[in-house]
Length: 227
Image 1: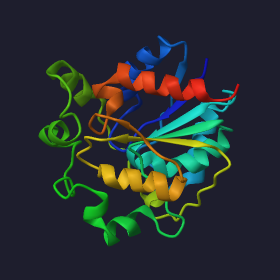
Image 2 (image 1 turned 45 degrees about the vertical axis):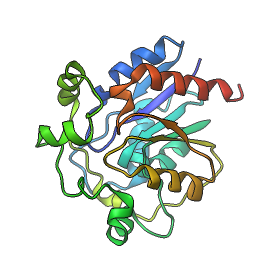
Image 3 (image 1 turned 180 degrees about the horizontal axis):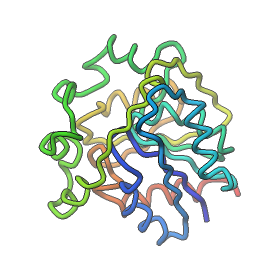
Image 4 (image 1 turned 90 degrees about the vertical axis):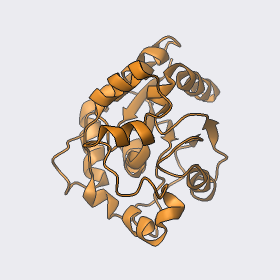
């Protein structure tokens, strides 16, 4: 049995993990979504790591998973939480030599789908449906729209964040992603984490569109870890 700490993305509340949590529990695992403040844009990565430690720091040797833009929080969080493994889900892997915003400004269409740039899935449900929940059935879409919440760690996106290799990683590419380009996801996994990514044939949020399939993938990762 493994404990998964789940870090929500910039467009979601912790409720986004409900269906994945149910699916993972069927494999005997436990999930612990964190709830990060949405009104503290001045916080840096270590500040968020301390908040997570206050919420879930009692959990021993967790697997820590971050989604999308919250990948920038994963290095500090996994260290603070003494993780035994970390999982990047369609997530931004920091570049020690450039902040997220510096990289995006330099390579906007290499990193993101150009049709996605400038869109707001929080205020505009049609944007959320077309770019994030496009692989969901209607019932799932209706539920997913209720899980949206803006979380923008602005100071973190201006940070140059060091990567360490002390904690092993898995990277999961969402191969039908319409936001962060799948090719960019693969590149970050190979060039920054020095690993070959796993793939799931979903859009940006497999925990919403395919929770059972995604839970199986996570359970397989957990099964490969040393006790």
